[in-house]
Image (cartoon, rainbow, N blue to C red; front, side):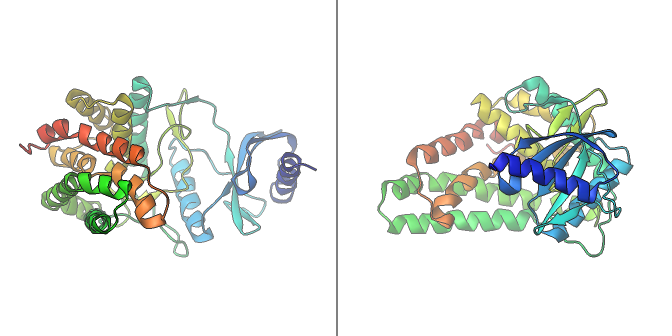
Length: 338
């Protein structure tokens, strides 16, 4: 029996064992590959999605409880179908599996399509508003990034400096290239750290309190669907307590990198799309600019050769640096750095 057939049989078996009240009419695999398998399940009661969650069980308890809370509030997220034992998930071979309602809609390609991004930002803003007030079960583990930005920025800044010292010792073309651009990157990171310390960040975190907004952390194509009701937000496996702007920064940065040019009016327009649903003060908007200023993309690439021992490619290093460099004229104006 080949892998696909085995996975189909496994899907049928898991449905029969955990959802005997749902009579199967059809089952297909929409994503294959071992623990990444996702099944589309058609039953007499409707269509569902059976998905294995590649997280620890205490985290799964947190994210599924949060999703059930959102669904009960009428937020546009997939409903979770309880098992025969009335649990939000069941465990098979150490992994949690969850059965979700199937959502039909148009996939929003927010990096490549401006209109999709505008719709997606409004959907994201509504999602952020809906997440407020969720109190996690006492026996779960949470992702909590509230208040950690300053320390994270400082830690990454220190790593940039350490990698500069490492590059001074190693005479490879890759390390010499890093050395040539390190000062500019370090300057961006230092400025971000200073501005964040002087911003309303600490005050806002305090104001939000313990159970405030949750960020999606991976919002983009494949997990934002436009439907007649509005934008459904899918794949909540990485939900984390945080100020909501991190998701916004990622979307704006990806769009600008895709366009290969930064436009001040467009940055403002995209933030306005979000703020039309989730109002922001001028000080809060400034946090988005500060987060855009920090060289996150560059860090994401260089940590692979420096921390994980992967081969560094000069072409990719320079390309990633250029993306960071291109943003500076616009951010200088927005943050009045000149």
